[in-house]
Length: 467
Image (tube, rainbow, N blue to C red):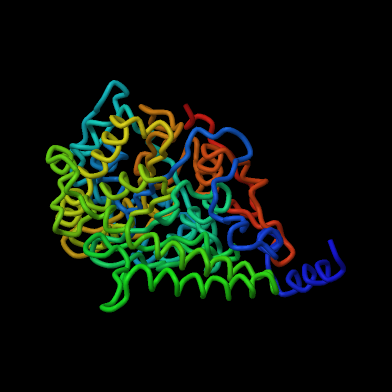
């Protein structure tokens, strides 16, 4: 390494650029277009992971665990009564008076599968795949408002500016797709997630690792089609000239964001052919469309699930589906029915479809929101629940997760975790382990710290969730 290289590294460090970015810049510096090391190329993890891909079904707004997965007969028995005083000691609620009355579950539960998992009547399709699910009933988080809690679930911190789980996965594993983004995001429901694009951002990692949001109808990305008068030859010649200029600048500065720009231009060019092919569902048999509940001409969560499977088949590493519709402060019963009608069939179909194609073994499917809902009532007509970080439910399937397991336990009212609590940090450590990473070693030097997805507080791998 020359004195100029050493000076440059110290300059970048003082400017707050992570050593991971500097290392990437060093690899790229001085390479020709033909020799350039692709930051998105597949990489080896720390050890052989059981999962190679991730599909995260994010139920933004926070579904009620008490109506879906965590049946509480005592909550039903004491419906309309005040909660025990000791339950509320030191408790902070987002909006309601904590001393509001208890609200019993609005729907019936039954045991399903050989494992006997208790699942609500709201989820008849999910109930059919009970033996494939790892149901975690003892999740907990630190944030009780949507944006910080969503960002914490996706980045490990309630603060903006940290890399997302998808970005860390890309940083560690790269992508097996040359013609589609390695990290893809879809959004459905009433609105986008409260945490916005920070949920799939790259933070202090190079921006080449951030998620790419695709549309589920028409061109997956706006302006993907060439304008009138521009054909592929003209576009290729123009792009080659631009890339030559960018390569010269990259060789001079070593700025990894120039590598991101080159990668983005090339990916956009390749997606002009691969994008329309991805979106064309005419090759999907009718029974598959019916299994998901997909109308090919209409945007929907179900269509996004089918597209997620198609992306994984084509080498995309991480797909995240946001469905923002679960914030039931009121109108709980009707809205939950609508939300489950929109998502239950497709979630189950995705797991079944991956399984029958031999893809579930190395594709980890994750379902869940940012927190749970209170056992106490909110809203007029005794038909709503407030935000609740102390206890909620998520599930995983495939990718090395142990099927037919219900893990953890909450108290009689679903208020606090009382056995085998799983913090968001523990979930992240476990996911990274399934992908082949030691969460303490997957780090980047930034602002004087070895930054990690799991942060500086202790995090454990929950081995009981792993097959």
